[in-house]
Length: 408
Image (cartoon, rainbow, N blue to C red):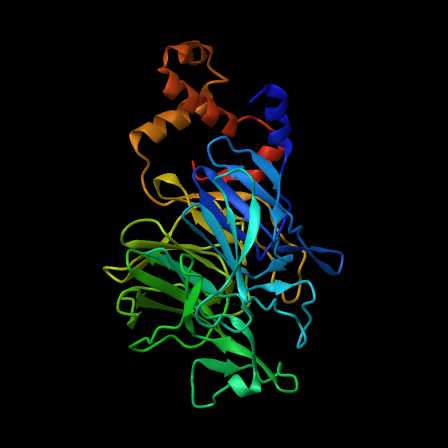
């Protein structure tokens, strides 16, 4: 990469947004969609572009997209599977209270993130029935399949069974024979067969909810919190993705306050990291917690971002158990919707390996110490390239300093 293009990339920054989709593929954090506020208007971000943040170099690039491009949306559920990003659900720009239009997906949208073409395609299902329209849902990925849970959306009167507790009607939002509400349904999409199915679950399922957070560890799918009617919860449930059995985890420690629009990220074989959200009393949160799913203990962690509350942000796993939080809002967006963000917060949840510590130390200090700078050429070629890439992460750039914050 030549110096001019490197400088150009270092000045690019993805726009502020909330309700977007983000996934990590290789060393790149991909960001698509979402919305921001301009004056009193909600403006959806362009659907024909995808932003890529290089986690090693600390620079953004933006790529044009082609193919069957999805509509501009927020609240969609995105995930990464075999180098592809999949989207399902969401709310389009016709959204209005009581009459908002949730985009009626009968297809899932998919884009290959590894071929450099960024061409969308929509997958028309060939087997089964797609779920009813919804947004603010979550998902797990297991054995090449995507398992969706919950969300807020609408159903026709003929599809609502008052005896079935999988859908709670939002009493203030129904129109004619269309009922809006929360659900706790589990739906499976298999990309290899383009099929939908709805497993028969066992055990005590979580209450219907939306804006919850989910994460996967092994064959277990975890769901935490979310909005249940007029309340926000802090309960955590586990779905065995082999037996389809629900169980609730009852913590034996202090617990986070109830919240929605937060994130939950797996950082080890037994740990989940929770960050941010909107609390029971409608306060934007900036606390971080680790849950050990084996001991059932929550532990609040110290971090340098206590002055950066976030809700409806994204959180993705990075290398060495890092968690990369991007975007979101620092306001109670149902009342004041002006505080959308575009910085990336890098949370360190585990001690770094010695190589990472050395690499970061060199990258931070090489420009200030001539002796260190003169010794760089002595490094093996592969290691030298890695250090040079990492050095650009710490380059003194005004926009870059505003963009990336780390715990180091």
